[in-house]
Figure (tube, rainbow, N blue to C red):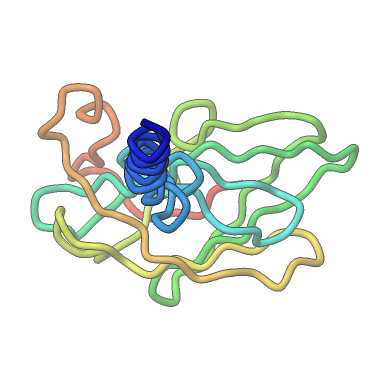
Length: 161
């Protein structure tokens, strides 16, 4: 009787440990950081934070509109320097504000960004930060909520700020 009880307990312990052991070895999906949207969050490029960055381009990719949220949580007015394929532009962001680029401000347009569905290398830098270069997705106006951001043929890439 005792050996049967010990065997049952040992078997139960083996089942419990065997079925929960995967959690100890496998990475947990909830601990992996990612951009849960169409755009990307830009790694630290200085004191300004760039969130959900994406480019909405016209059909042939000859003109693209950078859309993003730029967060300034400092007490200083700062500049965000953005460059796409040698086309530098600057955005001024007031202290303790968030600017919805392309919504709250004039569009930041760039020439020849590439066709929708691809990515383009974009450099971001603010304050004394070193800056960072990331691949930003290029989308078009297929989704109804992006149609307002598609650059029109009359638009031209002119500096913002």
